[in-house]
Length: 229
Image (cartoon, rainbow, N blue to C red; front, side, top):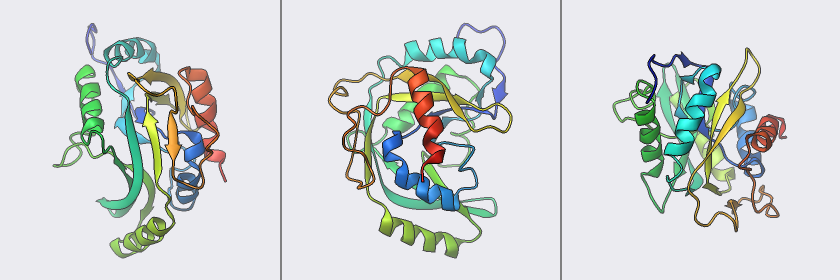
């Protein structure tokens, strides 16, 4: 990282993520509660950097990222397609994030973060295809079972759409679930009218802004997401 004499230590209890607004996460959490072994530990998320820095370095890293990402544009994200990949002996079923107005923007955001955090490139080196953004719904023992679950989930899934106007630095202490420690705002031209919307019947249309620019407000909302029924 810039202006650091010593390289930053990595921590698998820290990450930078995109996470959907809480009112749009109900159906995602219904799927994850059934199928995702990490349901309690993680909020619904797309990893951008994992592992990330230790909690003691969060403040200094936050200041760097906040300044460097201030002009990175917010963007619309849609979940409407379910897919899978093989990970070891398991098959991971996941939601594919689509950004129709700018198809490569998530990858550019992730690459920007990696450029600011030299050496934190595990996600872009994980496969020959490079960084593959996804939101995990569950893990299954075989391809046939995964394909059956995909068909079932796809039939029930209502498209989810929201504005990604901020990303989150998260951490967990011991065996407790991850919580949001810092919120990094992106440059938002038209987020005041509605920071999230969805054609999903499970969403709450009365909310015009689901996530706050303050860490404490977002932390409260996202920590409660695992209790959704």
